[in-house]
Length: 236
Image (cartoon, rainbow, N blue to C red; front, side, top):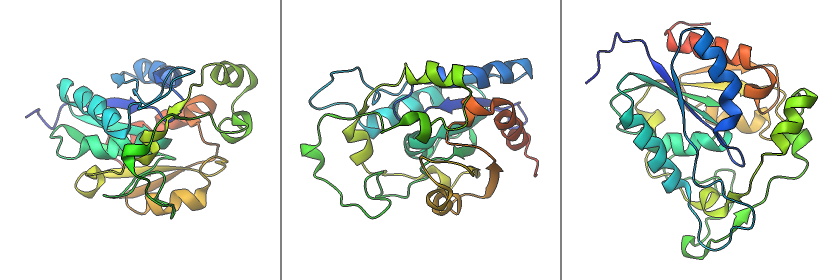
């Protein structure tokens, strides 16, 4: 077991349609402030034209857990949007996870999936194939407050998301036993605050960011301020 007094590190987990590139600015700021951070690329984000049975939430959770287990330090695990689902699954029982942070993210309960958490029906997983295309008008829904240059660069890098990742339910929920916080994005047009609130209620503390769905691109300094606050175990 690692010394609990050791300075924590960060594991940053991206959401649907993105890969780890979206955390680059946040990582640079963390590095400048003396923090170590890690990322993963979730296998459920697939190449254009992918068909058939594709990686799902459990494949993503396995990749996240492998990274958690590989880091020999206390970890603050940060999940953005869909990334909160594999983080919830992967963090359960992980001895070195000191805190979970959900950034406008899905803090699902056991048995819930992205398809069912707001009242949808659970599909037969054996029949789920193919992809969920990048959501309609991402410039407005995902990046409404992101400056023009970074927004255009991000739009060019978005990829399809496997349908199975949205269909598979969580089997374990790390937030039930680990300290956790929720960073609510108050101007979010992808997952509006009213949809974030039930997830925030499952965590131990809620913080607010006065921006849209992707604060790692629109306000990375403010996001890092809150991540530092949480990592130091202080309160707002």
